[in-house]
Image 1: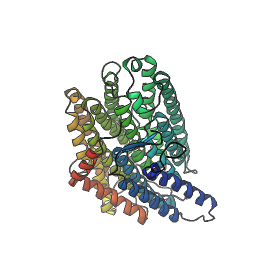
Image 2: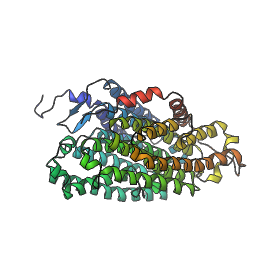
Image 3: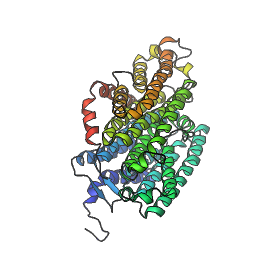
Length: 493
């Protein structure tokens, strides 16, 4: 134990976070002092090495006993390890997409790789946060880097507009979060999640405490793009460079749900805060219905494939909120299916946005549905991959998306009170199949309107096949990941 009050061995437990944070700073310095203005392939390779080392550190910590570190500001357990690995996988796949895309669109942006690592460090902090202060720090670290990534295509007006919208809405969410933390601290006298969960009934029934808790919920709802706090997502996803969109849609949502799950299972787990007029389960159920319904209905009207996938991402946040509601009524056994769903969603989302990034050339990204006509004839492998990924998003067997929804809805059926919510979710899944099939129909059953062009990039091709085969493998052999997700469902309180 040193003078700062924590054992230096705790640095070993925080190794993944340290590796990613230091790696991001090193890459930032390398880019700042580099005179090279060509392709940044060396930076991409270094980024993948850093992410790989962090993943190895996470794997080594899997068998370690769960414990709180750094004065209980962070916690290391299998739950944070599982979601941390998902975030690293999503970041690695986004890096694989980015090099070829940026070269094709001619906006080499060396800081991209450093910002991905810095955003990832914020996400890892977020999922390991055992205190509202560390949660805020992780959220802001993640958000600031993602704002810059969204606007990184500086010669593209849509990218700048998307970054501005995302920043303004994100700043509002951050203000709500810090205000909510202040109110909760004012009543409970602590920002530690476990200490908040141990407060007496008079304190947690205080209107000031309840308002503070509501503000914290709303701030996280912004990050996961839950309705009615979703307004930034379609424009930000459409305007950002497509590899950044893949990174945001997969990893930001995983980090946001990781933080939300820990929050409701520790700080707000008391029955008085779960059910009844002041409970978060009715609120989450309403948000789930609104989110998946609006996301799917709005996607039906989209003529842009990228915007269609953006609304699809909102709808998937609604499905995941069904699991959060189940967590409040059923208990820890609901966390495993949520974690499996997040894994399936990460691979499928990065892969589908990756196909969008791959299909097109400089100055012609081909986002319109009409532009996808005839893709199956010109590039049958690419069309098959996109079809598989879309079927997974729709929950069609034997894909990862099907088993994700199956396990999630099955565990929710453990509470009869959630039956109406599950019926709405199933109905929305059926609606989603229609607009996913619009893309498939364009690729296979419509004549080519103009020559089909794709980005020629080895890194992009390898990334897309990893995402596609991973989606299929998780659907054909889901058992091993279900077991890991079940093991990760218990965490430090």
